[in-house]
Image (cartoon, rainbow, N blue to C red; front, top):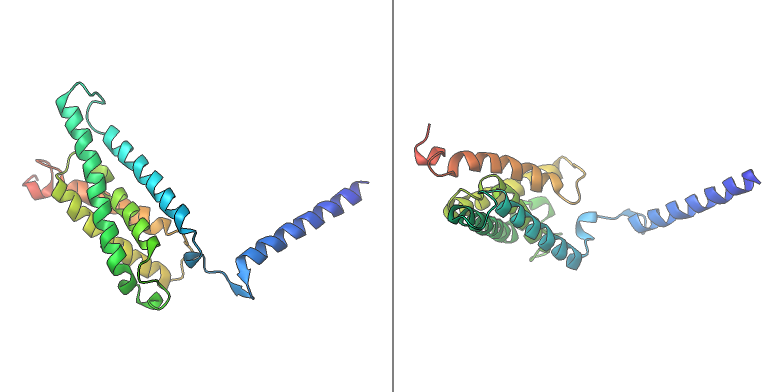
Length: 197
């Protein structure tokens, strides 16, 4: 009896693995996960992640009280800077990523939704450390710098054949490094660009 159950389980496992292999391979070729993304789900996921980031940034500054003007201002600036940096990064990535990743130029669509969504996420991540304190122009510069860092990281990872189909390292790894540098340079009165030592 036990042997029959084990054989049935093995058959189910083989059937499952066969279905997974069929999903991954088409006509004997490996499926390129980069170009097999369901774009409406990607846009919805990006939207939810950005809303979460903006709420996190807005709540991370000030005294967490709406009764204080300073706390409200810090929350509003954090919310604004999150969207400024994300929008700047998304626009630059949307326009230029196709030309920077030259090796995939012929494959990448002219209007690449993945570049737009991932560019937005990388810009939002890059401004997170100083979003409640830096000025809006600092968030704009941070988003532009992060767009370049993200696209260069995408190019390098693709050249070394690093397996990261969702580009998580390119978004969050470079974004956190840029956030660290942006908080050093752009924080008012304490940042390097404000004359602090």
